[in-house]
Every structure is written in structure tokens, then in C-alpha cells.
Image (cartoon, rainbow, N blue to C red):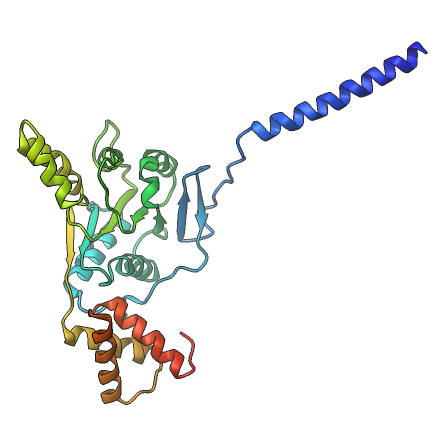
Length: 293
């Protein structure tokens, strides 16, 4: 009888221990997968739990198809080539009109430089989401010991009222004791030259005891970017050149006069001309011709 009671007690204890172990395992943080940097050239930073997710197929266009921005294209490619080769290079802010190929140019420049084999190792492109900017120090710590060079890329970067995460970006880019790792550079696109709303800067000027100091605090963020590349609305000729380039690249057989007339009508209905509008027209045209892109 005594032996039976002991066995049942042990069984009950084992059951309780199993439940306790299961509960503790649920409370433990999930295992962060280790990233093999050799398996891809592009990654997305997943801030929680903190790892690099490889991108097998990058959404980008050939650099030769990006028209109307020749000057800024050459500057960006030159800066990126120097960085890939291990030389000094600047953080870059690509700002200006929407739809003019700012993010497309970053991805295209990265691909063209890797295709040309400019560096000893492939250049890695890592996208970081706007809402994860405050985790930049964590990401840079992860990258600084890696044997590769990295472009950290944030698309559509801007800050709204009462958003203080811009201070984290300032410190990560050039501030702090350690500074930016030598194998890391930061590229960002934005519709705003100073990354902050104009009325936010004006409010700081009107309410501060020393208005100029308040404005400098806000504007100094964009000063962390050594290169400011401006993108402006394109002309009709540039827009048509984009459409013709896309049509030729994708083998869309259309009479040139018809292509021109339809492309201009499409831009009129959209109320704007840009690389994005040209691409959207090309997608519509390819669909009507029964062709994939």
C-alpha cells in the first residue's frame, strides 16, 4: 500500500514538473535564427526578435531603365562604388518628387555594382523599416564584425510631430563615441529635404527662447547625410523616354505614335508625369497586349 502511494505521488510530481517546464518554455524568448550572409545579397532587418531575413528575389529594375536623373544617378553610383571598394564614402539622402525613382535607383545601383564585381566581396543591401529606426544601434553592432560591406536602406524616411526617434538616427549615423562602423553606410529616401514637417520646424522657431538653436536641432539630422541628391518632376520628353525604354526592354511591339499618344493620355488622367506613372502605363499596355512583365 505504501509503495502504491509513493508511485502515485511520484507520477503526480512528474506531471506537475512537465506542466511547469512547458510554462517556462513559453515564457522564454524565441530563438533568434542565425543569418547566413552568404545566401543572399539583400536582406530585411526584422527588429523583433532581431535578425536579417534574406530576400531571394529583389523588386528592382535595370539601372539603364531609370531615365531623367542622369546626374544624381552617376553621383550615387560613384559613391557606392567607392564604398564597395573600401574607400571613403558618404551617407546619402535621396529626396524630392514622388515616383521619380529614388528607391529604384538605390536598388539598381547596388545590383549593377555587384554585377560588375567592384568589391572583393559582394556588397550587401539591408532594408530597415521606418518604424525600426530606433534599433539601428543593435543592427550596427550585429554588422560591424561581419566580413562584408553593407548599405542600410530606409525607404520613405520622415518624422512626424512628437517623434523623437530621429535622435537615435542622428547618433547612429555620426554621433556617439564609437560612431558608424567602417563597413556600414546609410541611404535613405524621402519626400522631405530635412525629413521633418515644415510646420514642425516653424513651430520650434516660434516657441523657442532661441529660435535658431531650435531649428538647428531639427535640421541637423539631414546634415548627417554627406550627399543630398534632389529629384524633381520630369519633363514630358523625359517621361516619354521612360515609356519608350520600358516598352523596348520588355519587347512591347507598339506603333511609336500610338505609344506616345496613349502614354500622354495616361499621364493626363493621372495628373502627373514620373517614372512611376510611366511604369504603371507600361504595365497596363503589356496587359492589353497579353504579355507578362
